[in-house]
Length: 103
Image 1 (spheres, rainbow, N blue to C red):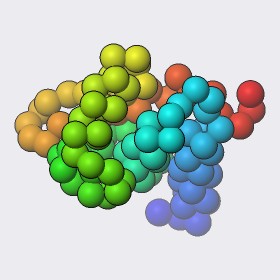
Image 2 (tube, rainbow, N blue to C red):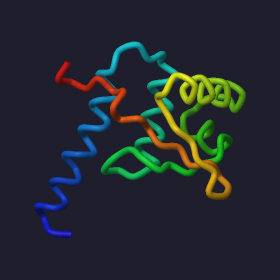
Image 3 (cartoon, rainbow, N blue to C red):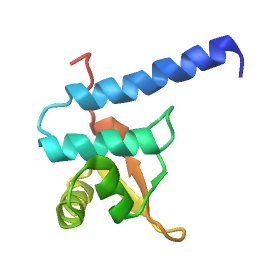
Image 4 (spheres, one colour):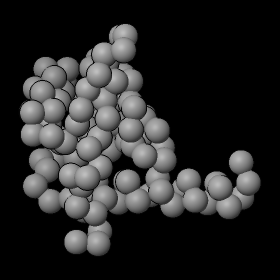
């Protein structure tokens, strides 16, 4: 990657993290899980995070049952989509739902 490509990737990554940080209406647990998924997924987009719920709970410092309940609610409410190309589940953050710092 060239320096400009690295800078662009970093700027996009920070935008995803900032958008999560500035989005209103998230509980602290939801925000923590979105940030963990963004950091463990594609750093440019916050997409395609493939962690088991146990690994995500460990990474986020939350209990497995709490993570499971919260992820289910976030999928239902449209914050995340899930796919099962195999195990573990692949989570994708719905970036269109994030408000971002510009709001």
